[in-house]
Length: 215
Length: 184
Image 1 (cartoon, helix red, strand yellow):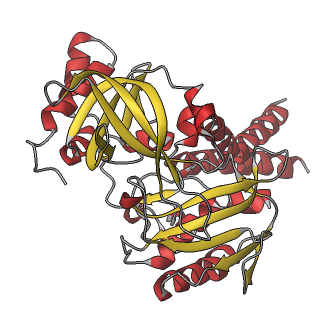
Image 2 (spheres, each protein chain N blue to C red; image 1 turned 180 degrees about the vertical axis):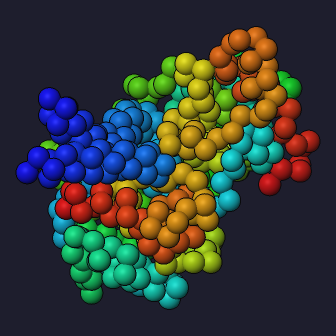
């Protein structure tokens, strides 16, 4: 009986070990499927090597010219960067309906983000995300209707909160390495609360440099 | 026989626990988009710099070739090539912050997970100090490997990977290779 139990335990442990990687990769794969499909999927930032990626909310904010809390209210065709003889290199200009802004008087912001080649604008416009996010924006160019921003960090420029945890829908794996400032954790612990998107915004807005000094 | 069974059970238990522990420390996602088969052909466009071309040749022959995937180099472009590597002087706002990026530009007809053709694009406006590591990283995405967290300096040699977000290592980790060899 004891030998049989040992054999079963051993076999179970071995099976668990062999499948642990595939289980974690299945979990990661499921999350990636969820992420690479849909709106954020076609505007994803996975598969790219970002120079000097910021490792905290504060670090992203310090690179931004503008941090806003809001929702995606619309999408239009952005600039076409396609080069002759190469695959399409298109962008979407997202309109953000702003609830709070690090600059006073900003009620809407437009940010250019790179879009997968095969996706039409019509598909995107029919599937706008519904969540509230913090957007970290840098100046890019002056459009006919006002400034068009780019992401301060493509992988981490859109930050949401899902069940108390940070999420970075443009690159879901990036959220794992994003540090929340210690003050947020202390505040959470004191209130026995989960992290909120409002807290993320408040902490970030404080770190945005004064106008003209962000890179 | 009884002693053998007992020894095997203990060995399996220890091995299983070790594998579980080791892989949770360095696991990365695999997929959801993969190469369409185990033969991966490359075309390196003329607009790549010599460093970028050299890095891509390294990634193909020294990083990926030692796995169960077979690789080949096409002298000219055709629609059947699996990986088309080229450079750009015209990055989008996002791309200005990327050294390079890999994208599936053509899925296999009827499939949502198998890619017929990837591109690896190098940003000429943002040179990198180690094109072997960068090319290894982007090539890894073309076979389905996701990013690994942490810094290579905190891992032993076998666990270091060019798939860490700031690539500074020229090879795939044993974990990466087990993903590749398990699928292709």
